[in-house]
Length: 62
Image (cartoon, rainbow, N blue to C red; front, side):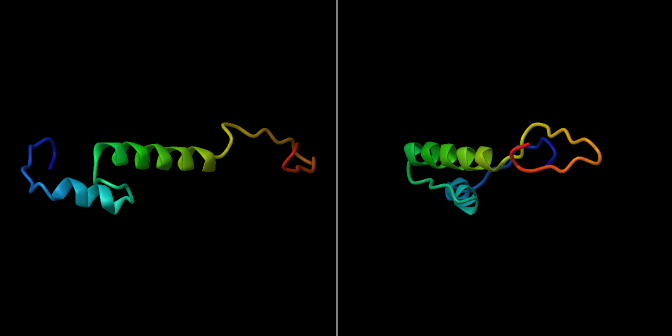
C-alpha cells in the first residue's frame, strides 16, 4: 500500500468498519459507535503514572 491510492468497492468501507464492531448503516451510527468505543477504551486505560516506593505495601487506594 505504502502511500498508493487504492480503489475499492462501495461495500469495502462498511465491511471494514463492521469488522471493528462499528455500525456503518448511517453517519450517525458510525459516530455513535465510534464515540462509545472511544469511551470504553478510555475507561479501561491505566493511570498515567503510578509511583511506588520499595519496601512499602501498596493497595489500590494508595
